[in-house]
Length: 269
Image (cartoon, rainbow, N blue to C red; front, side):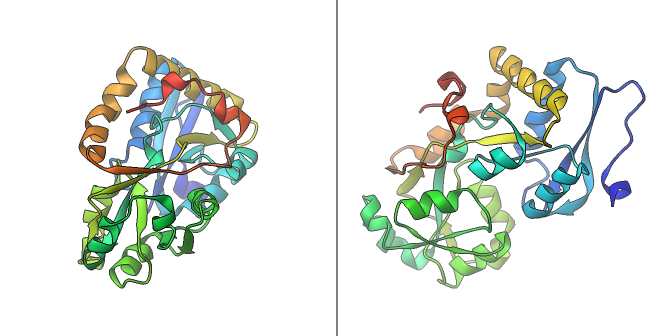
C-alpha cells in the first residue's frame, strides 16, 4: 500500500508531503491548493504530491495514523483534535460553517415557510458517518440519519431525508457532480445554517515540523493577502448568502484551543 500512496522526495527535501485523493472531493478542491500555498510560503524545502489511490475520508484518517499520508483537512472536532495534531488556522476562513440545504424540489414550499430553528427541527437531516456536524445538528434538536456521501444525494432524491446541508462553498459543484443520482434535488433558496466551524489541517501525532511549517505558511499567506485571493470568499459569501434567512446553531464541541484562534482569520460577512 505504501508504494501506491507515496512518491519519493528528492534527497534535499526536508518534508515529503502526501495529501489524500478523497473520493467525494473534486480534483480542484481548495484543500490541496491551500496546502500548496502554505508550504510554498513556509520557506521549508518540501515535495508535495497527492496520493495515487483514491479513498474515502475514513480511510484517509486511518492512513494518516499509519503515516502513509502526511496531512488531511477536515471540519474541526474534539475527536480529530485528540487523534491528530491540528494546525489551528481556519484554512477556509470559517466558510464551511455556513451551510446551504439540498432538498427535493417538491419540498420547496415546506422549507419556504421555515424561519426558526424550532421549525427546522421538524425536519430530518443527512450526514456522513463520523462527521463533526452530526453532534452540532443533534444538539440543536435536529434529527440526523447517516449514510455514505453519495448515498445522501439519493436519499434526498427519494425523500428518505428532508435536507442535506453542505458548505456554501461546495454545494453547487457537488450537486452537479451527483446530478445523475439526484435529478430532483435542488439548493433550497431561502435558508442557510451557520455555526462556529472551520476546516483545519491535521497531521500525524508528533509531526511538529510539518504542523509548524503549514501554520507559518498560512499566517504568511494571510498577511500578504494571497490566501484571501485564493479563496475569494467575499464573492462566494455575497452570492450564496444574500437575502437568506440565516439560522444560527451553537457548536458545543469547540475546544479552548480552537476558540483562541484570532478572529481576524475568520471571514465575518
